[in-house]
Length: 329
Image 1 (cartoon, rainbow, N blue to C red):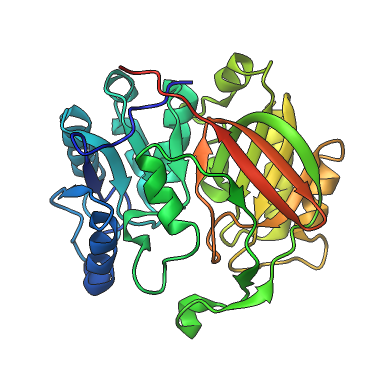
Image 2: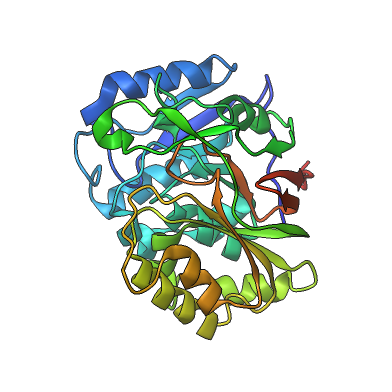
């Protein structure tokens, strides 16, 4: 696994692009996020479509052209996707993964940006960071893991602990996230392995397409074993069960040591099968931990996709420790 150079005072530029939605509908919030990122000493360069008030931000080819401009710019040490959305999947035919592999940088995003991060990690063997979009850091979005994510870009690798309280309300409609519920992870594991995952819906979309590079990743790291992490946004629990079976039939879980599942934001639970039952029924021989600080609810961790990690979860709480090293001089 290749780990890009961490950013420092001589290499502190982050390129922000809109591979999915533009942020024109929430400019005040986005500017707050930019101020927060810059308060850590980073310089930001935005591509032309970031502030468009549309979803997607522009046509697929233009979005990838703007991404390529950041990939080719040697002064940029990290590429951060501005926001989530629903249309990044259509950019995949235009992405030049060879170019990305030849110009290693950190790539960060959450939700729909899985359609970039996940194939980069699998095909290019390049670690990426899942958990926050560039526009995630307004007054409502900052949580106990926010500063740790920004510090990580500088090379500070902190142990991540489960939160004490989390949000259990629909903050999209009810306003600011309210940390009103005691955090208790469901399940246990004590494993060391290679992390891989992202937004469950996006991974399911890519499965079986020409942009599915999971088999090669699995074979490359079968001796390490894989720790999958999944962020389910709103998929119906029956659909989750069928998607897990599809992935299982395709060999996704061939070398899996454990699966980490975040809290579901918009729960869509069938009377026939729940989320936890879906995983246990589809994958009865794999340890699965549910309701983790991963995904769309608050607070949420950053997860280093492709990294070796030690995961210890017991009695409702846990830690994640990343084993990170730089491979580029």
